Amino acid sequence: MPARRGAQLIPQRPCRFSRKDLILRFWQVIPSTIPAVNRVIARVLRVARAMECAKGELPKVEIALREALNNAIVHGSGGDPKKKVAICCLCAEDKGMLLVVENFGPAFDPSQVPDPTRAENIYATHGRGIFLMRRMMDEVRYEKDGRQVLMKKAAPRRPRH
Image (cartoon, rainbow, N blue to C red):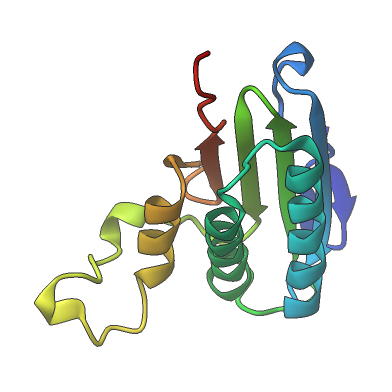
């Protein structure tokens, strides 16, 4: 059941996953501001380091998460600090990491964003964030009419002995 804050619906639990599948999880609702983004990214990276769920891949996770949060703030919330963005982090050393970022703005179709690597789009001001997210993570998927992005980073493969 969503909680109501102002005119905006905020889900009490934006992530619904089986507890047996993931060791640690948290979710947080933040204001649409850069300082809030920096704080939540620092928290996610602390979790990932402690759980070793993205060992050797943290710089990639950070870039993808920063892009997803910035997109949610700039495009989803229109830069309005009164609007909220929800983030969910699920982590297990043997399964990897799942990050979910949700905004409460208008619908969004990622297939309509031009490919920034095509010559005619080289100087475009949009599209690089999605491109980077897809390059940095193992899987990027959009749900809820594009308002929610799910990003997965697989657990590092362990050498067989």
